[in-house]
Image 1 (cartoon, rainbow, N blue to C red):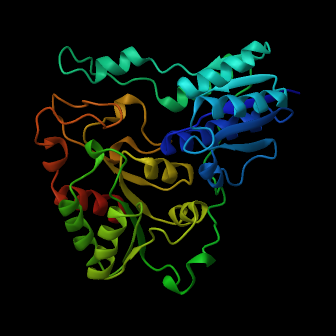
Image 2 (image 1 turned 45 degrees about the horizontal axis):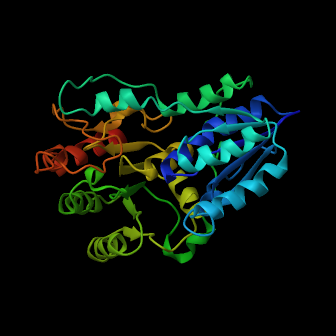
Length: 343
């Protein structure tokens, strides 16, 4: 009976991608206990988890931001006497934490990113354009390498497809017709479909009599844009800042389709078993970050020789025109939505 620590601190989508792997491993090894270490604000997404899974929070924007704070946290963490540490992140912070465990002679197994293959995939010259091993497969390999059993049977955080939506109150009537979610933003500009073009998608879909649209995003600029759309178009509702993260997951689980970028929302939809239509720009599914069990046919992207130019979408467009996103017409997205939902 082993006591196992699993570490993945960020980013939001990457943490969401650990859920299927962690839950599969926990069910495959019922006599072992698993503790996942992640950002405190992400604890709510680990819902309906196996009985042998616990979640521990860290705040790398607060007390654990500095080296001193991280070392204090790590010194307390090693007192838990874990038998095995699985690092699914492999960054400076996790390397420091793992070094503390190694000093106690605790076995540590680390996720392999294959940075060279990523660099070749995104190179401007001599690009090696071939799919890399999916990140979720790399995560599961860490558990296997550690000697743990691993059987894949995860389907959703809501395996019976029911979730409590009473928190919506009077804001939404009983579900009728199609519910479509739209999450038009991402962390980096290279992954964001032009706002004016996405608005045309919202406008056109809102004209359908049987469709209710839910808009997902962050506070500030994103909230302002989505509130404007909700005001201007019928049957369009912005949920930004209104509900907890676990409540948003419950709502996403009841959508018929989520339209999004290569973003955390794609992974949220994936772990609740909701179909995704994703739009890709600077990044590419070949990098291994496509949504868990999503249909590869439900990807909208352009075949440009410069793509992908980035794994995460943070690099400036060297062409200067963001053709990979701007040249995707709203009609392409609308037609694909209709093919998915009405064909």
